[in-house]
Amino acid sequence: MSTYDLIVIGAGPGGYVCAIRAAQLGLKVACVEGRETLGGTCLNVGCIPSKALLHASHMLHETHENFEKMGLIAGEVKVDWAKTQAYKQETVNGNTKGIEFLFKKNKIDWLKGWGVIEAAGKVRVGDTVHETKNIVIATGSVPSALKGVTVDNDAGVVVDLTGALALGKIPASMVVIGAGVIGLELGSVYARLGCDVTVVEYLDVITPGMDGEVQKQFQRILAKQGLKFTMGAAVSGVETKDGKATVNYTLKKDNSEQQVSAEVVLVATGRRPFVEGLGLEAAGVAMTDRGFVQIDNHWQTSVPGIYAIGDAVPGPMLAHKAEDEGMAAAEVIAGKHGHVNYDVIPGVIYTTPEVASVGLTEEAAKATGRPIKVGKFPSWAMRARRRCSRPRASSR
Image (cartoon, rainbow, N blue to C red):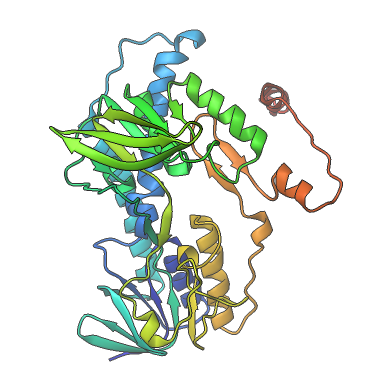
C-alpha cells in the first residue's frame, strides 16, 4: 500500500486542480473519485453540459431572430434533439478525458470509489485504507431538497439540474422553481427551443445578491425573450399525474393559493455541501451551523492535516472559486504561501445577454458607509468603441 503526501477526495474543479498543483510542487498525490469520469459535477452534469446547450440554443435563436437582419438568408432551421444531446456529451467527454490525461501526465493516482476519512492520515476507498500525510476534502455540492417536492430524474417530469440536462425530448412547457443562475440558464435554453417557461420564485427579485438595478433590467430582458415570472411565491408541493406536474404555491402578497401545470418541473432552489458518508463527525472535523466544513484562513479544518475547499466550505459555489482554493491549499500543504483574494471572484450568468459581476454591489458598497460614485456606459457604445479600435489590415 502506498503512502501519499496528499489524498484529495473529489475530482471536481477544486479537487483536480488541487491534485495537479500539488503534484507539480513535487508531492506524491492520489485523488479519490467515485464517478466513472473525472471532473465532478461541473464537467459531467453542471457547468460544461449546460454551457453546451446554452451555446447550441443561442445559435438557434440567432438563426431565427438575427440572421435575416444581417442579410444571412437560410431555410427553416429545425432541432434534432438527439444530435444536440450528442453534441453536449461530446463536449463533456473532451473535458473529462482531458483531466484524465493531466492526471497521468502528473503521475497522480486515481483511486476509484468513494472515500471515507477513517482518521487524520487515513482514507478508506472500498476495502483498502490508504495512508497520507494530508487530506483535502473537495467533495462539492448537490441540489438542495425542497419540502413537498420529490425529484425523479429517471421519470423526467420533476427534475433537478442533472435531469434537465438529459431530457428525452424538448417539453412543450416547463415550470422552473427558483430564479437563480441554474434556473435562468436552463430556462433560457428551453425557452429558445420553443418551450413555454414559467419561473416561480420565493423572493420578489431574481438572482439574489445581484445589483438591484441589474436584477430589474435583467428580468425585463428575459421576459421579452418569453420567460414568464411569478414572484413572491412559496411552493408547497408538486403533484404528478399522467406524465405532467402541477406546482402548488402561495402568493405571499395576498396569501392566495395558486397552481401552475407543465410537462416538466425543474427544481433549481440552490445547492448544499455534499459531505454525507465522509466520516467527518467520527474524524472530529467541525462543521458550521449551515452544514459546511469549518476551515481557518489556510483551508485547514479543526483536525490538523485535513483541509477543505470548494462547495464544501463557506463562500460562493463557483467552479473558479474552488479552483483558486485548490491551488492555494496545495501550495500551503507544500510549504508555500497560498492565497485567494475573495473580493475579486467574478460571477457570470450565461444567458443572452450574459450578466457578469465582480466586487461589491452598489447596495453593499453603500452599506459600508463610504461615499460611492455610480458610473454607467451603454453597451452599444462599448461595441462601437471595440469596432473602432480594431487594427486595420495591412495593405501589403
